[in-house]
Image (cartoon, rainbow, N blue to C red; front, side, top):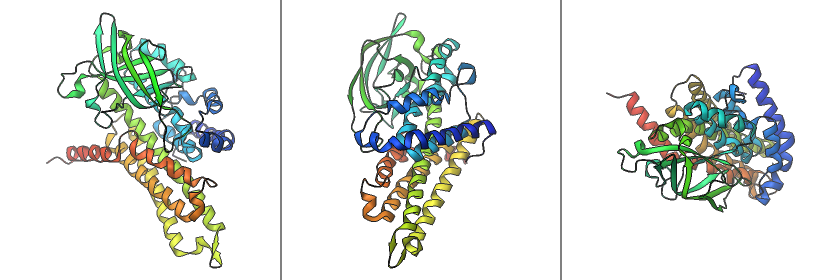
Length: 384
Protein backbone atom coordinates (compact mmCIF):
# COMPACT_ATOMS: atom_id res chain seq x y z
CA UNK A 1 0.00 0.00 0.00
CA UNK A 2 1.09 3.57 -0.66
CA UNK A 3 2.43 5.76 2.18
CA UNK A 4 -0.93 6.95 3.51
CA UNK A 5 -2.23 8.31 6.79
CA UNK A 6 -4.42 6.13 9.02
CA UNK A 7 -7.73 7.50 7.69
CA UNK A 8 -6.74 6.99 4.07
CA UNK A 9 -5.41 3.52 4.80
CA UNK A 10 -8.82 2.67 6.22
CA UNK A 11 -10.51 3.96 3.06
CA UNK A 12 -8.23 1.92 0.81
CA UNK A 13 -8.74 -1.18 2.95
CA UNK A 14 -12.50 -0.70 2.69
CA UNK A 15 -12.17 -0.46 -1.09
CA UNK A 16 -10.06 -3.62 -1.21
CA UNK A 17 -12.57 -5.58 0.83
CA UNK A 18 -15.48 -4.24 -1.20
CA UNK A 19 -13.78 -5.23 -4.45
CA UNK A 20 -13.11 -8.74 -3.22
CA UNK A 21 -16.52 -9.39 -1.67
CA UNK A 22 -18.91 -7.41 -3.88
CA UNK A 23 -17.24 -7.11 -7.28
CA UNK A 24 -15.11 -10.21 -7.88
CA UNK A 25 -18.03 -12.70 -7.68
CA UNK A 26 -19.91 -10.77 -10.39
CA UNK A 27 -17.08 -9.95 -12.81
CA UNK A 28 -17.39 -12.94 -15.12
CA UNK A 29 -21.16 -12.54 -15.48
CA UNK A 30 -21.11 -8.80 -16.16
CA UNK A 31 -17.98 -8.82 -18.31
CA UNK A 32 -19.06 -11.59 -20.66
CA UNK A 33 -22.52 -10.08 -21.10
CA UNK A 34 -21.06 -6.57 -21.47
CA UNK A 35 -23.71 -5.64 -18.92
CA UNK A 36 -23.81 -2.33 -17.07
CA UNK A 37 -23.04 -3.12 -13.39
CA UNK A 38 -25.90 -1.17 -11.80
CA UNK A 39 -25.94 -3.39 -8.70
CA UNK A 40 -22.27 -2.64 -8.01
CA UNK A 41 -22.61 1.07 -8.73
CA UNK A 42 -25.44 1.57 -6.25
CA UNK A 43 -23.26 0.06 -3.53
CA UNK A 44 -20.35 2.27 -4.59
CA UNK A 45 -22.57 5.33 -4.24
CA UNK A 46 -23.64 4.31 -0.74
CA UNK A 47 -20.02 3.85 0.34
CA UNK A 48 -18.91 7.27 -0.90
CA UNK A 49 -16.86 6.23 -3.93
CA UNK A 50 -18.32 9.08 -5.99
CA UNK A 51 -17.07 11.67 -3.50
CA UNK A 52 -13.39 10.71 -3.48
CA UNK A 53 -12.29 13.92 -5.24
CA UNK A 54 -15.07 16.13 -3.87
CA UNK A 55 -13.84 18.41 -1.05
CA UNK A 56 -15.06 17.65 2.47
CA UNK A 57 -16.99 20.91 2.70
CA UNK A 58 -19.17 19.74 -0.20
CA UNK A 59 -19.85 16.29 1.22
CA UNK A 60 -16.98 14.29 -0.24
CA UNK A 61 -13.92 12.70 1.34
CA UNK A 62 -11.45 14.85 -0.58
CA UNK A 63 -8.73 12.21 -0.37
CA UNK A 64 -5.18 12.88 -1.52
CA UNK A 65 -4.02 11.98 -5.02
CA UNK A 66 -1.85 9.32 -3.40
CA UNK A 67 -4.83 7.62 -1.75
CA UNK A 68 -6.85 8.10 -4.94
CA UNK A 69 -4.16 6.24 -6.89
CA UNK A 70 -4.22 3.39 -4.39
CA UNK A 71 -8.02 3.12 -4.67
CA UNK A 72 -7.78 2.84 -8.45
CA UNK A 73 -5.10 0.17 -8.22
CA UNK A 74 -7.22 -1.93 -5.86
CA UNK A 75 -10.37 -1.67 -7.98
CA UNK A 76 -8.51 -2.40 -11.22
CA UNK A 77 -6.79 -5.44 -9.76
CA UNK A 78 -10.28 -6.98 -9.50
CA UNK A 79 -12.14 -5.41 -12.46
CA UNK A 80 -10.93 -2.33 -14.29
CA UNK A 81 -14.45 -1.39 -15.30
CA UNK A 82 -15.29 -0.68 -11.66
CA UNK A 83 -12.52 1.94 -11.63
CA UNK A 84 -13.88 3.44 -14.86
CA UNK A 85 -17.21 4.03 -13.14
CA UNK A 86 -15.64 6.82 -11.05
CA UNK A 87 -12.71 7.81 -13.29
CA UNK A 88 -13.98 10.69 -15.43
CA UNK A 89 -16.51 11.53 -12.71
CA UNK A 90 -13.63 12.23 -10.33
CA UNK A 91 -11.75 14.23 -12.97
CA UNK A 92 -14.89 16.34 -13.48
CA UNK A 93 -15.24 16.86 -9.72
CA UNK A 94 -11.59 17.94 -9.47
CA UNK A 95 -11.97 20.50 -12.28
CA UNK A 96 -15.17 21.89 -10.78
CA UNK A 97 -13.73 22.05 -7.26
CA UNK A 98 -10.59 23.81 -8.55
CA UNK A 99 -12.01 26.24 -11.11
CA UNK A 100 -15.76 26.49 -10.54
CA UNK A 101 -17.48 29.47 -8.96
CA UNK A 102 -18.85 29.19 -5.43
CA UNK A 103 -22.37 28.94 -6.84
CA UNK A 104 -21.34 26.17 -9.27
CA UNK A 105 -19.63 24.19 -6.52
CA UNK A 106 -22.59 24.51 -4.17
CA UNK A 107 -25.04 23.57 -6.91
CA UNK A 108 -23.29 20.45 -8.24
CA UNK A 109 -20.57 19.07 -5.95
CA UNK A 110 -22.77 17.83 -3.07
CA UNK A 111 -24.88 15.82 -5.52
CA UNK A 112 -21.75 14.56 -7.29
CA UNK A 113 -20.43 13.34 -3.93
CA UNK A 114 -23.47 11.11 -3.40
CA UNK A 115 -23.60 9.89 -6.99
CA UNK A 116 -26.97 11.55 -7.59
CA UNK A 117 -25.07 13.37 -10.32
CA UNK A 118 -22.66 11.13 -12.21
CA UNK A 119 -20.17 12.94 -14.39
CA UNK A 120 -18.64 12.29 -17.80
CA UNK A 121 -16.04 14.18 -19.85
CA UNK A 122 -17.04 15.40 -23.32
CA UNK A 123 -13.60 15.91 -24.83
CA UNK A 124 -12.86 13.50 -27.69
CA UNK A 125 -14.41 14.11 -31.10
CA UNK A 126 -14.36 12.17 -34.37
CA UNK A 127 -11.59 14.47 -35.66
CA UNK A 128 -10.05 15.58 -32.36
CA UNK A 129 -8.65 13.16 -29.83
CA UNK A 130 -5.04 13.74 -28.88
CA UNK A 131 -5.13 17.06 -30.76
CA UNK A 132 -7.61 18.76 -28.42
CA UNK A 133 -7.12 22.18 -30.01
CA UNK A 134 -8.71 20.88 -33.23
CA UNK A 135 -12.09 20.18 -31.66
CA UNK A 136 -15.03 21.45 -33.69
CA UNK A 137 -17.83 21.67 -31.12
CA UNK A 138 -18.84 25.32 -30.72
CA UNK A 139 -20.55 27.31 -28.00
CA UNK A 140 -22.08 30.60 -29.14
CA UNK A 141 -23.32 33.16 -26.61
CA UNK A 142 -26.89 34.28 -27.20
CA UNK A 143 -28.19 36.52 -24.45
CA UNK A 144 -28.23 34.60 -21.20
CA UNK A 145 -27.48 31.27 -22.87
CA UNK A 146 -24.82 29.42 -24.81
CA UNK A 147 -25.82 27.30 -27.81
CA UNK A 148 -23.78 24.14 -28.32
CA UNK A 149 -23.34 22.38 -31.66
CA UNK A 150 -21.04 19.45 -32.41
CA UNK A 151 -20.34 15.78 -31.76
CA UNK A 152 -18.36 13.85 -29.17
CA UNK A 153 -17.21 10.24 -29.25
CA UNK A 154 -15.67 7.59 -26.96
CA UNK A 155 -17.41 9.24 -24.00
CA UNK A 156 -17.37 7.03 -20.91
CA UNK A 157 -20.48 7.28 -18.69
CA UNK A 158 -22.36 9.33 -21.31
CA UNK A 159 -25.38 7.04 -21.48
CA UNK A 160 -25.84 6.19 -17.80
CA UNK A 161 -24.30 9.33 -16.34
CA UNK A 162 -26.31 12.54 -16.11
CA UNK A 163 -23.77 15.36 -16.02
CA UNK A 164 -21.26 16.22 -18.72
CA UNK A 165 -18.16 18.42 -18.71
CA UNK A 166 -18.00 19.65 -22.31
CA UNK A 167 -15.13 21.36 -24.07
CA UNK A 168 -16.25 23.67 -26.88
CA UNK A 169 -14.84 26.57 -28.87
CA UNK A 170 -16.19 29.96 -27.86
CA UNK A 171 -13.67 31.68 -30.18
CA UNK A 172 -12.93 29.49 -33.23
CA UNK A 173 -10.51 32.13 -34.59
CA UNK A 174 -8.27 32.20 -31.52
CA UNK A 175 -4.52 31.62 -32.04
CA UNK A 176 -3.35 29.33 -30.58
CA UNK A 177 -6.56 27.33 -30.69
CA UNK A 178 -6.40 26.47 -26.98
CA UNK A 179 -7.18 30.08 -26.09
CA UNK A 180 -10.57 29.79 -27.75
CA UNK A 181 -11.70 26.71 -25.79
CA UNK A 182 -14.10 26.89 -22.84
CA UNK A 183 -15.54 24.27 -20.47
CA UNK A 184 -19.25 23.88 -19.75
CA UNK A 185 -21.50 21.89 -17.44
CA UNK A 186 -24.31 20.20 -19.36
CA UNK A 187 -27.06 18.22 -17.65
CA UNK A 188 -28.57 15.16 -19.26
CA UNK A 189 -32.05 15.81 -20.56
CA UNK A 190 -31.17 19.23 -21.93
CA UNK A 191 -32.95 19.61 -25.30
CA UNK A 192 -30.53 19.14 -28.19
CA UNK A 193 -28.26 16.78 -26.24
CA UNK A 194 -28.63 13.30 -27.80
CA UNK A 195 -26.85 9.98 -27.23
CA UNK A 196 -26.56 8.46 -30.69
CA UNK A 197 -25.08 5.03 -30.01
CA UNK A 198 -23.20 2.80 -27.60
CA UNK A 199 -19.82 1.68 -28.90
CA UNK A 200 -18.68 -1.95 -28.84
CA UNK A 201 -15.17 -2.44 -27.44
CA UNK A 202 -12.42 -5.06 -27.26
CA UNK A 203 -12.14 -4.74 -23.48
CA UNK A 204 -13.32 -2.39 -20.72
CA UNK A 205 -16.65 -4.15 -21.00
CA UNK A 206 -19.71 -3.51 -18.85
CA UNK A 207 -19.21 0.25 -18.90
CA UNK A 208 -20.94 2.40 -21.48
CA UNK A 209 -18.84 4.24 -24.04
CA UNK A 210 -21.00 6.34 -26.31
CA UNK A 211 -21.24 8.87 -29.09
CA UNK A 212 -23.32 11.99 -28.58
CA UNK A 213 -24.45 15.01 -30.56
CA UNK A 214 -25.33 18.60 -29.67
CA UNK A 215 -27.83 20.26 -32.00
CA UNK A 216 -28.68 23.81 -30.95
CA UNK A 217 -28.37 22.69 -27.34
CA UNK A 218 -29.07 25.72 -25.13
CA UNK A 219 -27.55 25.91 -21.67
CA UNK A 220 -27.59 28.84 -19.21
CA UNK A 221 -24.52 31.09 -19.38
CA UNK A 222 -23.77 30.34 -15.74
CA UNK A 223 -22.80 26.78 -16.77
CA UNK A 224 -19.50 28.14 -18.10
CA UNK A 225 -16.93 26.88 -15.58
CA UNK A 226 -15.41 29.82 -13.76
CA UNK A 227 -17.58 32.19 -15.85
CA UNK A 228 -14.58 33.10 -17.99
CA UNK A 229 -14.25 32.11 -21.63
CA UNK A 230 -11.01 30.70 -23.03
CA UNK A 231 -9.97 28.85 -19.86
CA UNK A 232 -11.34 25.41 -20.70
CA UNK A 233 -8.15 23.95 -22.14
CA UNK A 234 -6.10 24.90 -19.09
CA UNK A 235 -8.82 23.66 -16.72
CA UNK A 236 -9.17 20.26 -18.34
CA UNK A 237 -5.42 19.77 -18.84
CA UNK A 238 -4.95 20.25 -15.09
CA UNK A 239 -7.75 17.74 -14.57
CA UNK A 240 -6.05 15.31 -16.93
CA UNK A 241 -3.08 15.19 -14.56
CA UNK A 242 -5.47 13.51 -12.13
CA UNK A 243 -6.81 11.40 -15.01
CA UNK A 244 -3.35 10.22 -16.03
CA UNK A 245 -2.49 9.31 -12.46
CA UNK A 246 -5.65 7.23 -12.24
CA UNK A 247 -5.01 5.52 -15.60
CA UNK A 248 -1.43 4.72 -14.55
CA UNK A 249 -2.80 3.29 -11.31
CA UNK A 250 -5.29 1.18 -13.25
CA UNK A 251 -2.39 -0.17 -15.32
CA UNK A 252 -0.52 -1.09 -12.14
CA UNK A 253 -3.63 -2.83 -10.79
CA UNK A 254 -4.32 -4.84 -13.93
CA UNK A 255 -0.64 -5.79 -14.27
CA UNK A 256 -0.53 -6.80 -10.60
CA UNK A 257 -3.53 -9.07 -11.08
CA UNK A 258 -1.96 -10.63 -14.18
CA UNK A 259 1.34 -11.19 -12.39
CA UNK A 260 -0.33 -12.76 -9.35
CA UNK A 261 -2.34 -15.09 -11.59
CA UNK A 262 0.83 -16.04 -13.48
CA UNK A 263 2.98 -16.75 -10.44
CA UNK A 264 0.22 -18.87 -8.89
CA UNK A 265 -0.22 -20.86 -12.08
CA UNK A 266 3.55 -21.26 -12.54
CA UNK A 267 3.79 -23.00 -9.18
CA UNK A 268 0.88 -25.34 -9.97
CA UNK A 269 1.52 -26.29 -13.60
CA UNK A 270 4.16 -28.97 -14.14
CA UNK A 271 6.29 -29.78 -17.18
CA UNK A 272 9.23 -32.17 -17.45
CA UNK A 273 8.58 -33.39 -13.93
CA UNK A 274 8.61 -30.07 -12.07
CA UNK A 275 6.55 -26.86 -11.68
CA UNK A 276 7.19 -24.45 -14.52
CA UNK A 277 8.16 -21.87 -11.88
CA UNK A 278 11.36 -23.90 -11.47
CA UNK A 279 12.30 -23.35 -15.11
CA UNK A 280 14.72 -20.48 -15.54
CA UNK A 281 12.87 -19.07 -18.56
CA UNK A 282 9.71 -18.59 -16.48
CA UNK A 283 11.67 -17.15 -13.56
CA UNK A 284 13.19 -14.50 -15.82
CA UNK A 285 9.72 -13.49 -17.03
CA UNK A 286 8.35 -13.29 -13.48
CA UNK A 287 11.31 -11.19 -12.35
CA UNK A 288 10.83 -8.69 -15.19
CA UNK A 289 7.07 -8.52 -14.62
CA UNK A 290 7.34 -7.74 -10.93
CA UNK A 291 10.18 -5.23 -11.43
CA UNK A 292 8.10 -3.36 -14.00
CA UNK A 293 5.09 -3.24 -11.70
CA UNK A 294 7.14 -1.87 -8.81
CA UNK A 295 8.83 0.73 -11.02
CA UNK A 296 5.48 1.89 -12.39
CA UNK A 297 4.01 2.18 -8.90
CA UNK A 298 6.89 4.41 -7.79
CA UNK A 299 6.34 6.68 -10.80
CA UNK A 300 2.67 6.94 -9.84
CA UNK A 301 3.65 7.81 -6.26
CA UNK A 302 6.02 10.56 -7.46
CA UNK A 303 3.31 12.11 -9.64
CA UNK A 304 0.62 11.86 -6.95
CA UNK A 305 2.83 13.37 -4.26
CA UNK A 306 3.69 16.32 -6.48
CA UNK A 307 0.02 16.86 -7.26
CA UNK A 308 -0.75 16.78 -3.53
CA UNK A 309 1.83 19.53 -2.99
CA UNK A 310 -0.23 21.73 -5.28
CA UNK A 311 2.38 21.71 -8.06
CA UNK A 312 1.95 21.03 -11.76
CA UNK A 313 2.82 17.41 -12.42
CA UNK A 314 2.27 17.01 -16.15
CA UNK A 315 5.84 15.68 -16.55
CA UNK A 316 5.52 13.20 -13.69
CA UNK A 317 1.96 12.16 -14.60
CA UNK A 318 3.02 11.73 -18.22
CA UNK A 319 5.96 9.51 -17.27
CA UNK A 320 3.82 7.44 -14.91
CA UNK A 321 1.08 6.98 -17.46
CA UNK A 322 3.50 6.16 -20.30
CA UNK A 323 5.58 3.63 -18.39
CA UNK A 324 2.73 1.99 -16.50
CA UNK A 325 0.51 1.52 -19.54
CA UNK A 326 3.27 0.07 -21.73
CA UNK A 327 4.37 -2.14 -18.83
CA UNK A 328 0.81 -3.38 -18.35
CA UNK A 329 0.54 -4.48 -21.98
CA UNK A 330 3.78 -6.46 -21.69
CA UNK A 331 2.96 -8.01 -18.32
CA UNK A 332 -0.51 -9.15 -19.43
CA UNK A 333 0.96 -10.72 -22.56
CA UNK A 334 3.65 -12.48 -20.51
CA UNK A 335 0.98 -13.75 -18.11
CA UNK A 336 -0.84 -15.28 -21.08
CA UNK A 337 2.37 -16.92 -22.28
CA UNK A 338 3.03 -18.41 -18.85
CA UNK A 339 -0.49 -19.86 -18.85
CA UNK A 340 0.06 -21.37 -22.29
CA UNK A 341 -3.16 -22.44 -24.01
CA UNK A 342 -5.19 -21.69 -20.90
CA UNK A 343 -4.13 -18.05 -21.12
CA UNK A 344 -5.99 -17.81 -24.42
CA UNK A 345 -9.10 -19.36 -22.89
CA UNK A 346 -11.90 -17.51 -21.12
CA UNK A 347 -11.61 -20.15 -18.41
CA UNK A 348 -8.83 -18.03 -16.84
CA UNK A 349 -8.96 -14.26 -16.23
CA UNK A 350 -5.65 -13.42 -17.93
CA UNK A 351 -7.31 -13.07 -21.34
CA UNK A 352 -9.48 -10.32 -19.82
CA UNK A 353 -6.43 -8.54 -18.41
CA UNK A 354 -4.85 -8.72 -21.87
CA UNK A 355 -7.95 -7.21 -23.52
CA UNK A 356 -8.24 -4.43 -20.92
CA UNK A 357 -4.58 -3.40 -21.08
CA UNK A 358 -4.60 -1.52 -24.44
CA UNK A 359 -7.08 1.03 -23.08
CA UNK A 360 -4.34 2.42 -20.86
CA UNK A 361 -2.00 3.19 -23.75
CA UNK A 362 -4.79 5.05 -25.56
CA UNK A 363 -7.09 6.64 -22.97
CA UNK A 364 -6.21 10.01 -21.35
CA UNK A 365 -3.64 10.65 -24.10
CA UNK A 366 -1.79 8.02 -26.13
CA UNK A 367 1.75 6.90 -25.31
CA UNK A 368 2.97 9.04 -28.20
CA UNK A 369 1.32 12.12 -26.71
CA UNK A 370 2.83 11.32 -23.31
CA UNK A 371 6.29 11.20 -24.89
CA UNK A 372 5.71 14.63 -26.45
CA UNK A 373 4.51 16.03 -23.11
CA UNK A 374 7.57 14.58 -21.39
CA UNK A 375 9.99 15.91 -24.02
CA UNK A 376 8.42 19.38 -23.97
CA UNK A 377 8.83 19.56 -20.20
CA UNK A 378 12.39 18.23 -20.33
CA UNK A 379 13.43 20.85 -22.91
CA UNK A 380 11.96 23.51 -20.65
CA UNK A 381 13.64 22.06 -17.56
CA UNK A 382 17.05 21.73 -19.22
CA UNK A 383 16.87 24.80 -21.42
CA UNK A 384 20.28 26.20 -22.35
